[in-house]
Length: 520
Image (cartoon, rainbow, N blue to C red; front, side, top):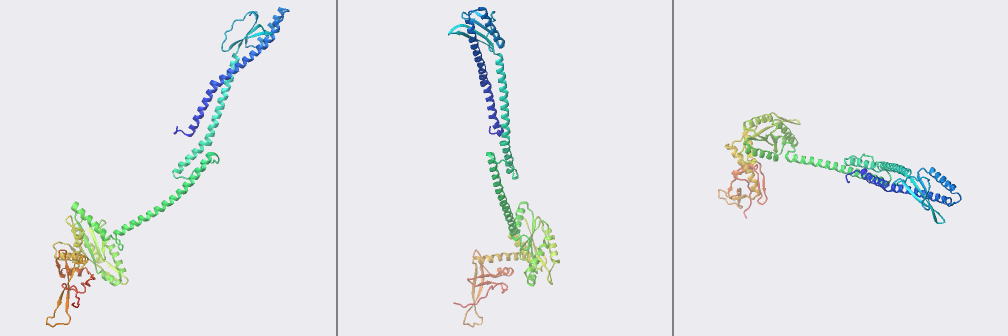
């Protein structure tokens, strides 16, 4: 029942009512009507017989002329039979049940559904002087009642049909059609289309329902518009956040000046190459490129010119590398270049092309023209390589060796090379010196300065000497770490001792700092 349409739900009770009403009319009301109709005719017959009997009583009491009396009776009864064709027989008897009329006794008619007979006594002064029997055929009356019943049934069915059609049309136009239109509009609203037209109904419950739907649609449209506005705002914000995230991610992995990847991203990619070499036993090449004569441009034309030079050189180097090669600015005028799945011979050939391109490059700034060179350190690494720091240190040592050997050249790292080993040791000392300062392992030693001629001065003088203490307690002399400080231009300040490590101020290995002070 719940799945039926509204029209069906309304029609089923109506049809049940019509069937029940027709059944009641056919089986109860029409039978009662026919019975009442026949009873009314029987009442009329009885009344007629009473009238006839009352008229025959004086004739039967006359005693003057028997023949005239009977003639008059026969004439009256014959007239009655002629006037009433449905009267089959009329029998008049005296008090002794002797038949006076008709002269010849009619055949006895058996009573049936349509034939009835009536006996009515003829009385005078309270005494029964005779009886009158009437056999009457009610077939015409029954037929008439049946026709009336048929006419009533046709009229009733016509009225029911008209009522049903009226109700159907009313339900269709007043209820079903507006509800169907509301259903269609609701489907459009659920699909996001708010342009549907509501039926023009302003009165009754349906009109109130339509007005409620219109208010609901207007409310949905308002909330939908607000929601879409908020969604667009959130989309814009999300797009901005995504762009900001992409920019932040780009900035986190790229150099702001040149657009190349930065040192951190370069380290990540080198570590991936190391992991790959341990998996598939592949070989890779790393270049450490340090520009020559770059400081001259900075000192002569300023940092703006230096930045422009770095941008142009970055574009030049990028144009000379392969698409899958990784070029990075490691800091200042130093660049790193990773050739994945490359042997040292191929890396050396590409490096020569880079070196020639840098040599032929000319940088113009205002009225000045500069030629730039490059020193390149090349190192090949594979599954046996230990870490990124070791590989970069080896390439840096090779690059510095190339500078010492005359600049504008390529130096391939060889582990047995004495110069490279020495440079690599200096690089390690550069890190150890900073750690020693942070861990308070820089130590000052003093020794008194005594004149060789034996002259005693009023004030004593002392020589302050610097030492480094290792983790295991070994004392390291300046000859081992001062070269690293000189190369990497380390400047260290220690407040509690007033210590300054300034190699450009003193080239001596043994003496790191002189400070004269009075003895206590």
